[in-house]
Length: 201
Image (cartoon, rainbow, N blue to C red; front, side):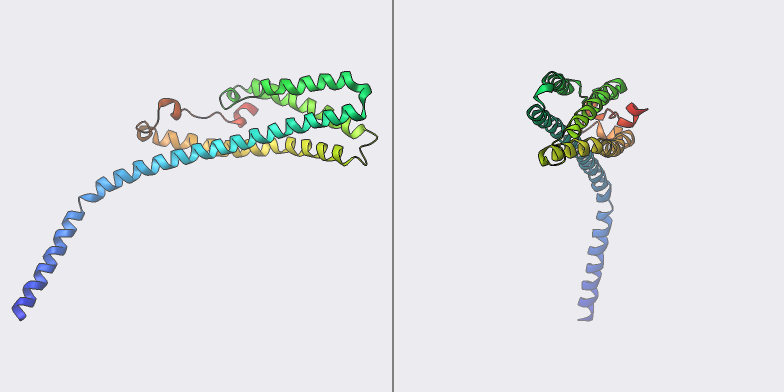
């Protein structure tokens, strides 16, 4: 019985040693696969986050333009004598849509600056006209529209800072891992994203 136990124990130890020696070969392949998989996941996650922030910013800007259109309508009702002035403002609001930058054209600081100047001037004039109405103190529709436009205008910088934060992370990531990422993304997907802070400078 002792001999059987001894051989049984030895065979168990030998089996364990065999497993351990075999395990030493797997981690290299496993690590290689895990790194590539992890980089792909991070790359896609950063792209998705950038797109979400960008779309949120554009959606907010569209709502602001819509609110500006509604305010124009209210002003045309309360101040029909200012129809010509309001028509000009309406055309300027329409022009903002064609002036607006995208994720590529924002690399040109003149494009961003032109849009910001045009948008800011229309917002300022509209709010001034709205608050100058004698009905403003009791017209809750006018008040809500003015507040909505002003709040959206003040959120612009917050959105841009958040976008820059994510885009900067993306840029650093592709810079550090460009060699690996060439296997999972085209060259166009490895181009650094322009930042709003660059346009501001």
